[in-house]
Image (cartoon, rainbow, N blue to C red; front, side):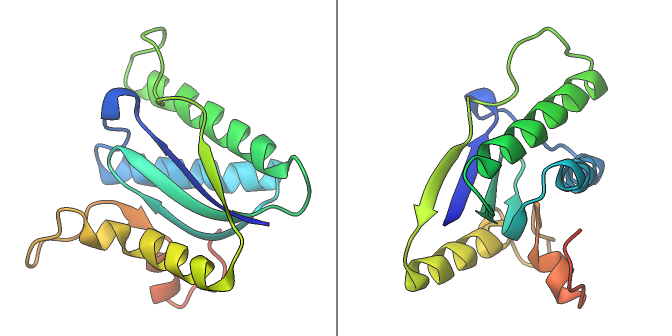
Amino acid sequence: MIYHVINRGVGRQQLFFQDGDYEAFERVIAETLEKRPMRILSYCLMPNHWHFVLWPEKEGDLGRFMQRLTVTHVTRWQKNYHCVGFGHAYQGRFKSFPVQADNYFYQVVRYVERNALRANHQGDEPPKGHASFRHSSRNVTRLF
């Protein structure tokens, strides 16, 4: 089963302030993949939230992958921004929605991939956020 997975900063607070924050999160994704393999079909990181389209191999893989990813990210984020002990970074546990039909799969991937392009994109200003389309547009066959 494929899942559309989302989460956002608590109180819609920003999670990513600069390019380095996005790149650090992408490094956390790569590190998490080494310990908890996961098929990442698409993703988008926005200033205050993110989306993934994931295809776990077996029961329980989704939860284990997301737990490691989010705990590692929050630990490093809080340390980097000197706010250890100030509370939660995410609004709660991630939300996941099963993608059960082929046509819905294509809609979800399109939505996730275009999210960064739609958000606050004006004229020549680059889109805010990072998405897996950046990798595919550079002919990179593997995301990580």
